[in-house]
Length: 477
Image (cartoon, rainbow, N blue to C red):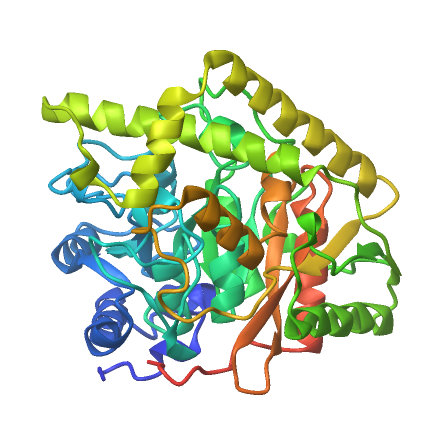
């Protein structure tokens, strides 16, 4: 496909090492990535905007000596602003919107030497647990293009899983890093609340529910990228506890004998598919074989409270986003500007009162405290990431008019992830299981607040014991 045919065999740090030692030039790596995007994207629709000329200018200007100098990277078309590039948020309402400045996390990506080559597909405003926006069409799963790639970072996951790039930016407000990582057979870490900066345009997103990081093929790429981006920006309202040492140092470090709780029954009583249960049982067995203490235990969570709080907080933020965009356009937003479910959520945002919003935030914090208390006797908790293997495309339709039905279907697919957005705890989906027909099924590990270190240590141990990096989907670069 290009003069550097081994491109997809390397992770991000591996590519950076080739550049650093002079074995491959950044331009060769860029050409290899472009060749794969052009070949694979017509089948996957993972990338909605290419930035090839910008990437060539970045290389020509000289790359900083960061950990990922010369490594191609993609941004989710949501939240992170890159000056001069469009950010549509997966919505027709934002057609033509071009960022006039960089988000802080983009500045840190630049300093790390990453070469941004495109924007990835996302559902409208990140509101779906699959990625099938009206504006751009569906992102398809490289393991089965008739199935969804997860959401809301589905385009990012499809791009990485197919070998277009070794890692890609992702965001997570209720599971949107971990869900697509599970659906596409990747490692996906949601970091601790406020670990990465949301500025300069916000001090927090979705009242602190949302975090930014990436989907990657290797644990070490995730750790090294978090080293490059973590830390508060001046003006942030709060910050995560500082790490004791670089996260990359945790990869390969002895995790010791960890105490791990596990459960497979979904909060709210929705059924968990046998494949997802089997994935957790196998992971628990592997952890036991590695010398960890594993026992079955589950937190008590009022899922009605959690669902209502999530609905109020998301609706308030969607309403504000639509109103702000309408103000910038100089006209009122209409139902035709957005997808039906988005409009219904925004209408709820208009109907909810300020008092209901305050109660929702209080509920969120209360549930978070209960989860943190549950984890006190344990180092980690293990669950399925999803309650089902990747769904067929069209199973979750945001053009319907039944908001309650849509929310119920989304919860039935992804009931395990949002609780750790409520608590702000770090959580990661780890690709340890595939179904008999070749679909990936992730398992989720969550740690105490601020303790990504333990997650990285265990994930690296699992990666060594049961490697996944060289598993190849049918659609591969």
